[in-house]
Image (cartoon, one colour):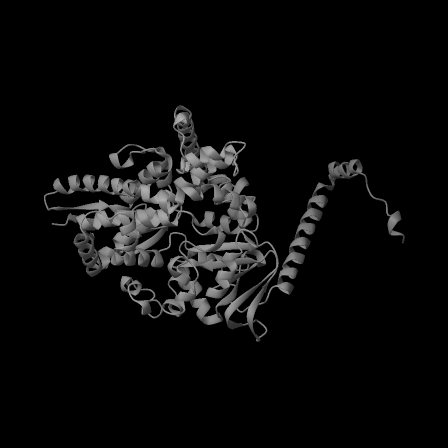
Length: 550
């Protein structure tokens, strides 16, 4: 048969067939074609990607993804599998997909060095970010990410953060004043204070003043719509149905758009609220800029840099949509991450009174509030407590990316493949899913030694306190908390300085205890990010017994 003589139906005859009753057949054909494409893609992945050992599938539909998602300690699962299968292994995922998990410092360094180009965010992550915070720095990839990051970098320089240190202290002292009033009104000389809510307020007011020259006033008791939008997440935990939909959305991202659910609506409301307040702040700041045009000078505040980037002749031009997205990203990151870290620090100090006492002694012996440079280099035990908290409790505990191109990832030690042979590198095919458990790496006994799960600030004070394997981890102070490479957290120094300034004020002035004793169980729940909660409390409640230090 001559292939060129096969009759090809015209578009009009095709749709006539559909209308005359062939719609089901056409739909079936499209479904079969989609399935064929998926099968061919999976076969390519299997052929081109090194097949590694890993845990067996526990669900035909979900692989082991549901087990990981429902666990109270995902990092422990990843670490256990690394012990069993090696520093790189495969996990079965949703609808036949597989996931390569990296637990090797050399492999992780290679991965992070190629982020935004070779390894990119998954379609599900991009869809979620675009719908909630827009096309800002968290969403952007490749050249767009480089341009946006370069435009914002001056706002997070050492010189810029040095000027903001007083803002961090102002927020801390506002909280101190409110706590003093609460304690003075108590008959017992102490009070039970829900500290996570207060850390949220400190973080929100700080990012408002430092980033946008705007005081939200949450520490003064003002009702703040964006704070209320954030707080609804803690009291609305994701249901089992929602978790199942999210797992399926990793294969079919359109599920996020077409299937309604409560948390999706919460994120939509949060996005609208953040956009409204961002636009209000931008309008006010533009007016102030126009009124002060004659003063000149270099503008390195975040809001100033954003307004500057709007100009069509700006070297690092950003669209109006991108500018608003950056503001939403800063609001989200500023509110969520530092408040979580401060809350965990107060929990750990309440569990370890010897550490709390030693930290207070260092701060009191130092005298007045430390300057930026002193916070950075002259308070070793404060630095140790802060970094031990960041090690044990990273606010973002996991990275998941998609290979945008074929790659070969080197390993620092060989692993056994599914064939039984050993390999010291992994071939990765385009389309392969890669996961790094930040929590597992930060707390790995193989990397940090036998006391890796314990809160031990002393490990940061001596040269041999950090093991040789931990020193192989490339990241801030050998931690993955701020990740590494082109996507390393731009606000890292801002966050650490705020963390240190606020914690120094609180520990100098107050003594903290867990309300129900040092053995009170603390669980992990989901706000927007994972947050601590005292077991049995509503929302994300962390009630501590607080008294003034005298």
